[in-house]
Length: 142
Image (cartoon, rainbow, N blue to C red; front, side, top):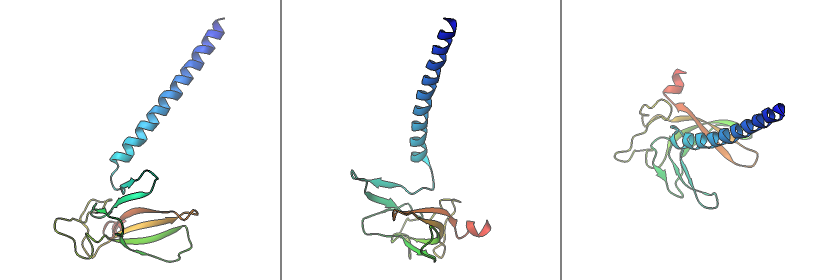
């Protein structure tokens, strides 16, 4: 009888730990996404389509039809490519008044002749993902 009670108590503790760790993981992921710096913010619609993306240099929201000015290096058929991001229409070739071009990695101002160094990942389902590794100044020092 004693062993049965100990076994039931152990099972109850395992179930409670599983529930609490699952809740902890969910709350930790949402706070990490909301407060992480250096990531591009996307606002999605009800069907999952991207409505608005921010420029990684100046954090200005890009409207539909506005694109980042970038250069992707060859070869084009590999899953990982290097690319340089010069900016958006608000910060390149001439920044609008009050717009500052800040590197998301080192936090320093990027000159108009500078750019962000990034990796472009091409997935098999034709989706693309860009990860900024730094600006032309801080990647030069690495």
